[in-house]
Image 1 (cartoon, rainbow, N blue to C red):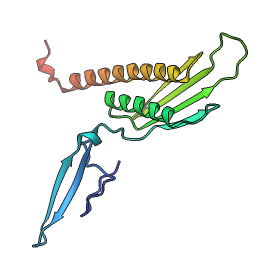
Image 2 (image 1 turned 45 degrees about the vertical axis):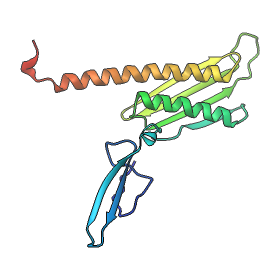
Image 3 (image 1 turned 180 degrees about the vertical axis):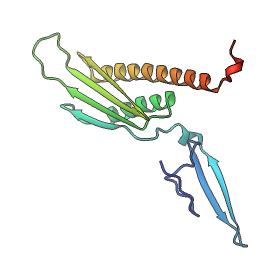
Image 4 (image 1 turned 90 degrees about the vertical axis):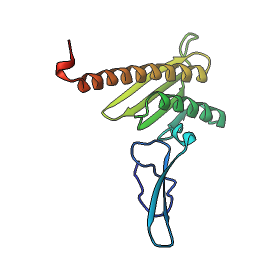
Length: 162
């Protein structure tokens, strides 16, 4: 995401390090420029990028896309480092009663790594999506926990350990 330092409010950009912040600049009558940063918590809750959705053999619907968007925003609440989220939902045409009918694949891109999740369900694409997003959430929580432990270890002074 780029940071616009222009004179007018951009609306497309956020200053670095502050999710949901908007840069505002004002020019007074003397020509002086005042730069302020407004913080909007509703923008902060929005995902950095909207998920890319591919439906194969499943009719597109606003409800399905809304559900996927809501689940993706939950992941963004767990890990704010998400750069891309690809969701592929597919209706499978398999013979046999016990084979899965719906398959979901999530590919979540973070700086330096990728989280991939596959889930299948017999009856309902929403249940396959729910299971896939729940598994991705667990992986992202684990990633953030490990990342936090590494940062804490790096920040400790060598003589402070006992």
